[in-house]
Length: 156
Length: 77
Image (cartoon, rainbow over all chains, first blue to last red):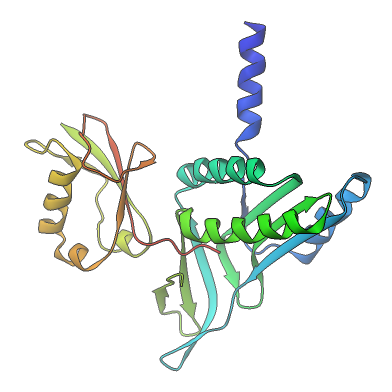
């Protein structure tokens, strides 16, 4: 029974929530970097920051993106991606955060942070994570224009 | 038999169903045909289905209480 309980806690712990409400702040990113100063085996970090771009579409400018997700499925998919990337690269750490709700143009909506002993695995893993997050996670961005009209974003 | 439908992104603006009685429909291919007949615009959109929180790539049987998600192309990040 105790063993089962332990197993449940372990499994529970493994499904990490990646979603944050609204934009990801520079403070949050700075704190996240600072937290790694005690992990002195790390020699290189790689960080990707996705920022909402003020695209111009038919003479209208994107003011914000409103993100929604099929959260349960997205977290399960992310769990698999995390496992795959961890088994492919010798990483010390991996952190992924994605916004939900409204993120204004110029604000950060995706934060991917990998660390390893040497730079190359951190950089390659970060790149692979970003590609897979964009292609495989059930997340949708609604581009909101200044006049409050909208269109659904499509990833290229 | 009743199933639950959830839809996302631009499909959520098109398909506003929650519970659907699907007597006579036994699998996701049948459901897809039914939905495209009721919501013809769905035929013009690329979409994937998830059955009980798993993305499906082939026709799958439906049972009472199945949860089917209709998902347009992803655009996260």
